Image (cartoon, rainbow, N blue to C red; front, top):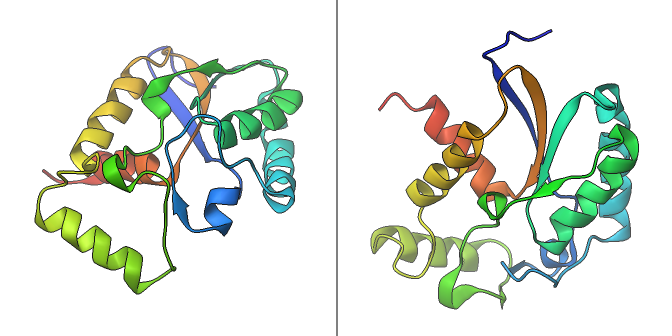
Length: 164
């Protein structure tokens, strides 16, 4: 039982997708579905979330891999997700749909973006602000489940745990 003023949200990162396998950064809405392995991963997580059947508010990013993840979860919690752009993947700017070799190549691009204050990407601060806006809209006294993406979830956690 949570207090009437508490806001508790369980964030779920989408399952493994074709973009993960191909090492492609993408914010496109209808590309890169879940892999079979990703769907199985989500199925296992959804079974654990079934304890919130009918008692949780449910949200999802509008991107295909997140919507597919939410669809699997919805069967277990008996709720349809509210689709919200606040849970979108990071904005990649000119790097959207860029495939790269894992490792040093991606770290080089990340360092360039950080060094020049993210002129082509959505910054961590911007993602954190967007995710905080989402969290402020959660209904007090209810548990929520939200399907999103790694970077926005990490940005929110970083913001909430920073000592600034």
